[in-house]
Amino acid sequence: MQTIMSILGADTAVDSLWLIVGLLGQLMFTARFIVQWIASERAGQSVVPVAFWYFSIIGGLVVLAYGIHKLEPVIILGQLPGVVIYSRNLWLIHRARRDTAN
Image 1: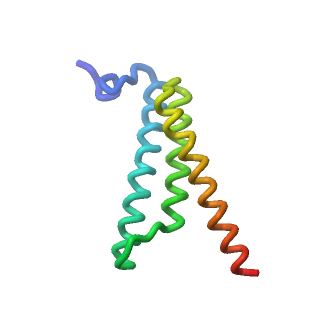
Image 2: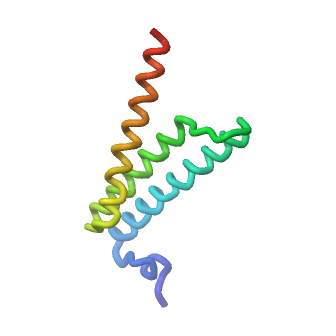
């Protein structure tokens, strides 16, 4: 009988670890939408909180690492631009906060 991990394509301990890493990255993406939804509901309008961008960059980096490990060009090419965009958004947010504080 196959285990759940082998059904998911993880036949070794290293494969299992990387599968867990990939799934955790995907959970970060899910968390970012939950955070955004809650913030929007509280505000009564569409809001993108800073936590959304942190979950985005963490999830993007983790999934990118998984894609690199698996040598999956679709995942790599799908995540790489997002990580750059998330980083840029965080940089702009922190720059605006710094400028407002001065």
